Image: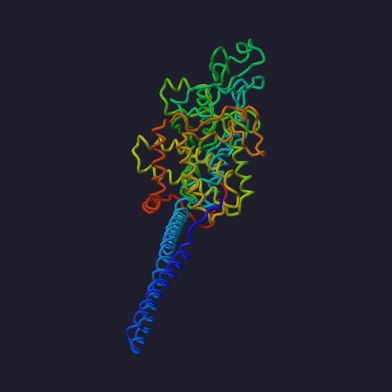
Length: 495
């Protein structure tokens, strides 16, 4: 059946014609009755009065008609103009905030990377030269991972993540196994794995690999498993010894220290005062890792905030690192999207808004907010969005629409209490990502599992409030910059 709607313009026109016709008939009848009683003068006077009244009636009807048809259109135009005006104000405010407080200077970022690369390179070189075959050894290279190397770092180029691949003795084989574990009390176990260690013969554990077993393994169900805690402990000791060897090379150019914070090994680099161009303190997180298969690594997880008993329970668990696949995925999308694509810009803005909002929360909720909207979870949301939204719609002119998509996506995830890991158990991965079978066919991992409905509802409420209050938050927030955004040409090209 065809649906019909009332055309108001035609309706009011018909009403005017109908009432005009009725009025004319009424005047004509009255005129005929007057002709029977009056003369010519009264006749002509009556005709003039008739014409005047008829014209007045038509004029009034026309004014009413125009008013009735014009008002809804005018209101709609006013609303559209108001919406467009507010949209443009939001966009201008967000663009200004991005340029002033989020966007990094390519010069400073590039120079910071150069400082980090040279120091870490020397550390690894010394570590590889002085090692024993009976234990864990350096592979001899390092991998640059994280936001600083994926072009979505925010605020300041002062933090870097470096993956340091390690190797076991040649005859030992690493056997990663997915283990079912309750995540309700330990959300940090999302995507974790245990790593069994197999020797050619069981008898060789006592004869040949006792040193390795005592120093790096724990026994679970009569099986040797690589202990993340023991590997971290050895790695801290090894890096400290390497730093003692190379420190003198850089003592005139920068001050280097090694600290452990929540089980994270952090290299602190402070250039000396003559480095006017990029005189910022840099923190380099060094992450020990073992290669599993096809650019997949397992990393020793830092459980620093857990209790002693939980720390013992978490000892055999390792994190899975897909950094190489993440970088490949972002590079692929960059080739498909417009040259001025805003996908990384959106991710930077979301991370910055998360940090600004966290300042207004109670301390008890702040760390939970940051955990739910962690940088990895925000990046996972971006991975899904770039598949859902056509490439051409990531043009920078559509920035506000894409930010709105980010908020909508997260609202739906929090309401469903689910944000699925993009790589583990994802059957909808693009064809060019050839993930190893054991990871592609693994059980899907929910990154929001274990936080609880009430907490996720609170996070959803705060997220929607952030969207409404975003202009006010951006106006009130002016984070200081601790480095020179645009500087003169650097005088120091090497350390």
